[in-house]
Length: 158
Image 1 (cartoon, rainbow, N blue to C red):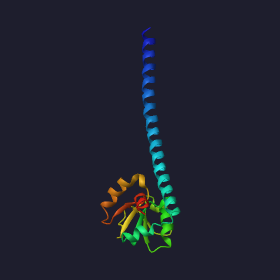
Image 2 (tube, rainbow, N blue to C red):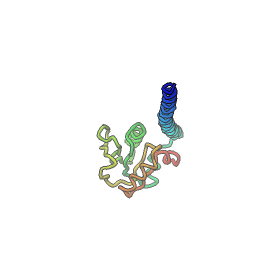
Image 3 (cartoon, one colour):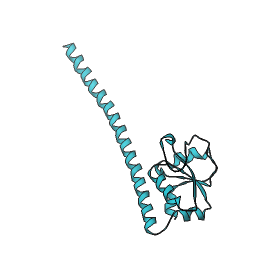
Image 4 (cartoon, rainbow, N blue to C red):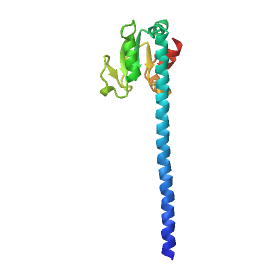
């Protein structure tokens, strides 16, 4: 009888511990999925604003010229970074280089440096991964003295 009680108690304890562990794993998975969803929503809304800017016959060059940013760097050379590079290609703004954590894996028209590299002087650094802007700005501000600007902010100021 004692063995049966111990067996039942250990089974119950195992189920409780397993459920708790599973709950933590599911909770982490849900948080990761929610974070990813929020990141992609922010990117979608920014890109939607960019389309709106283009439909209003505006361009980003005007923002850079108004602020005397002639030579810039682009942080984040994924979709938005590539679009920004292409938009500025035929403008008077020079994209000196890109910055990306995966610099070694990116092939584009400009040199791409790691955020840990010594970053050459530019008039401004434009951050395209807007969801992580605060963290990126904090990291870059220790390495450069130029303005660090979110692409999203530019799109709402044009």
